[in-house]
Length: 346
Image 1: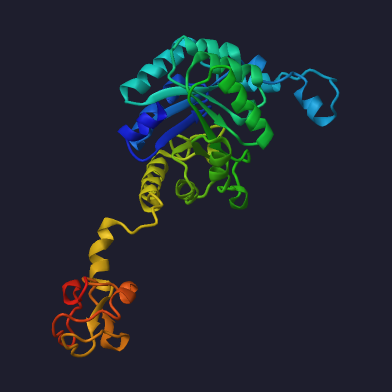
Image 2: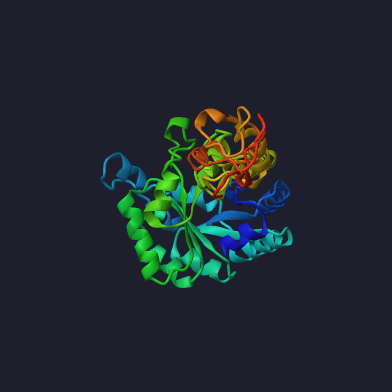
């Protein structure tokens, strides 16, 4: 499915990660979908979860001391502000379809997955926090839908186990996303070389979920092989939202698309041979064997009889050994091109 999107659109897929930046307001979410479409996105992605299934009420104690002491519903209450119900998601899905966008979501629990299955989403995303959540990975695999799996904060062994489980559970198409779970990610931590390393290790397409403030990061990611790009998205620079510090505006998103498309074109295929467009330059700039002086008919040609000059329309100097020692069939005037028909036995 993802390959088909690339073939039918541009050189890469661009996902506007709306996530939680709608602040639980369906009208804002609608506006963000429309803005993402205008910016050139191929898809919009949300985050779907049951707040009570996200964090323990003892999270603070467990992080601070490792012991459950006092219940704290702060995190649960925080996540409750971003929840949409099934009908609200259905309306957002229709809005995305009207804009020609793919609509999908990161699911964080099986209840949310079940709700999204009711909308028949075309694919799912799992955040890197869920790489070790094997029950959820298995549940997504069973749907038969393609999965995009982020790999930040994950070891090679953990990714390997997740990929293996997804495949064994009947999963179909799988894409990995390189990301770094630092918000924002400093330039010296971006580690874009991990993209081709992941692709080689797992034999899978690898995209880039960009948490940097670096305008060059997506371009460099494209140069090392990424063809799927995810970027947190906001309606404008003044919109207060959870991921404001790592989100781009519609104008910035359009700029990312332009820079990545140019980077992909500039990266090319990696073919070692020169391209057809260079043939004209090569013809004029390369050298051919010419007569340094008059070469009389019947003379055995030696190296001193020859000189390598432009243009490259005749016998190249790399074939010098095929000319030296041959006898000339005709008089070859000085400065004339050595032609194969001039040589006896050719």
